[in-house]
Structures are given as structure tokens and as C-alpha cells.
Amino acid sequence: MAIRKIVTHPDPFLRQSSKAVEEITPRICRLLDDMADTMYAADGVGLAAVQVGILRRVVVIDTGEGLMELINPRIVEQSGEQEGMEACLSVPGKNAIIKRPMFVRVQAQDRTGEWKEYSGEGLTARAFCHELAHLDGQLYIDLADEVYTDQ
Ligand code: ZN
Image (cartoon, rainbow, N blue to C red; front, side):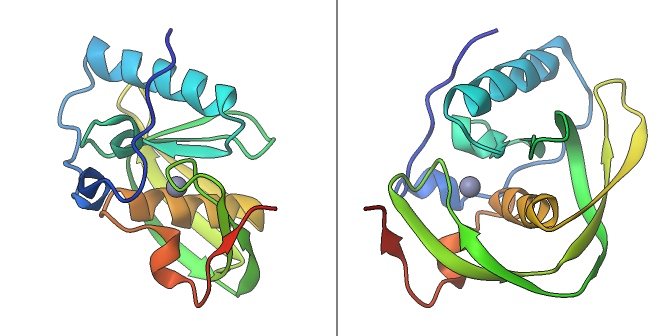
């Protein structure tokens, strides 16, 4: 278990696409452990592997309902709409109002390789969209009309 360094905007590394995990090795499990440690230490609700310098499709999310470890996640259903404040550990000190679906369902592998479904509304739906976008090199600020600086 260890806390990893978070890559921050405008580092071009954040713009790269992450590759699928083909085999869930001990190294991937260690990455999951470290990502959870790093997310909790930074008071975040989600973290993608690219944010700690690893271009693999791995995400951790905890919006207060327990830790979700998502390997090769994909959105399979979304509905509704919400508008709310969003921030990112890779864009420190900033926030913006972003439109997202109200409900999102995701399929992902867990660390045993089994495919599972996860769904969430509100903040969890927002976290799914935000973290999965990181895997394709996208940041929430790309979607913002205006980005604010924390007071
Ligand atoms: Zn982020």
C-alpha cells in the first residue's frame, strides 16, 4: 500500500488514451490498492490510473457507498440529466458546473476478472462519467463553459 504522485493538468500525459487490461496481474492489484490509498489521502471520490501515471483502464470510486474497483469499465446505460459542481484531483484548486446523466450503469471486471454491473445516481453517476472520461484522455474542464478557482 502506498500513495502515488498525482499527475496534474496541463501535463500532456493526461491526454493519452489508456489501454485495456488483458491480464489481472499482482501488479494490477497493487495498482488498485495504491489508487484507493491515493484517492482517500487526497479526499477524492474517484481516481483513474492515468492520474497516477499508468495508462491502463483501471478506476477506483468511492462516493460514500464503499470502494468500487473497476477494471476495463464501460458505460452500458445512462439516462436523465443533472447539473452540478465538479472538480478533479488532477486539476487542483478548480471547479466547474458540468452537465451529466442522472443515472449511469457500468460494466467492469473486478480483481478476480469477473464482469460485474454497477449503477448509480447523482454523484456516483457523475463519478462514473468523470473517471471513465479520463481513460480516453478527457478532462471535465473540456466540458465547462467556465472554470472557477477555489476561494
Ligand atoms: Zn478527474
